[in-house]
Each structure stands twice: as structure tokens, then as C-alpha cells.
Image (cartoon, rainbow, N blue to C red; front, side, top):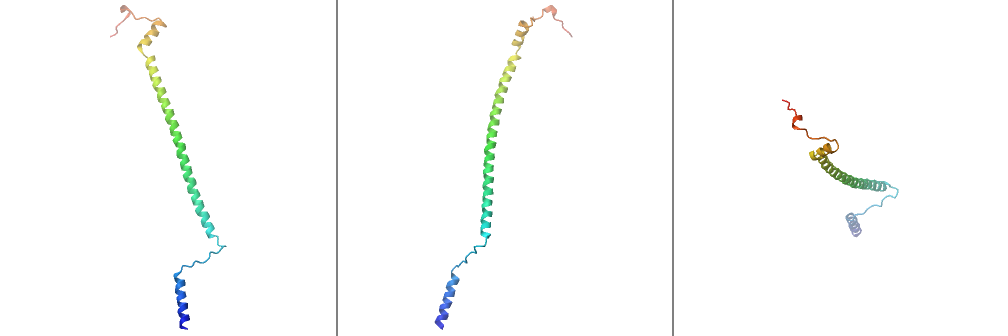
Length: 115
């Protein structure tokens, strides 16, 4: 009897040292619920990342077109300033006055000084 007791004791110690897992119940759906929950979280994060990247690219295009429009407006402003300076030049105004309006400089006796 001593050998049987010692063999049972040896077996019990051996089984305790091993990591034995019990089989999962096939009808237990908690694993599927957990997997679906984790997959939905990952999908939500992925959609958020994709949305943010699309938004960044779209805003980049908007900034680029705004810069192009700004450059065009700066160039148009430069041309308009040059044209304005040309149109208000005294030489041009004097030429229009003498050619088109037949204006002449007044003679000395036509000038009246007011004090």
C-alpha cells in the first residue's frame, strides 16, 4: 500500500505543476462579443484616422488655391497701381488738357493774386 500511495502522491504533484486548461464552452458567446467589440473599436479608430487624413489633404488643397488666388490678386494690384500712377501723371493730364480740351496756360495779365 505504501507504493500505491506514493505513486498517487507523485501523480497529484505532477498534475499540479502542469497548466491544464479547461475546454471553452462552445455555447459561451462572450468571446465573439469581445472580438466584435474589439473589431468595432479598431474600425472606428481606422475610420477616424482616414477621415483626419482626408481632411488634412482637402485643407492643403484649399490653402494652395487660396495662395494662388492671393498671388493673382497681388499681381493685379501691382498692375493697377502702375496704371493709376501713369494715369495721374501731370504730363498726361497736361497733354489731354491741351489736345482735347484746348486749354492753354494763362498769360501774366490773366493771373490775379489774392491775399
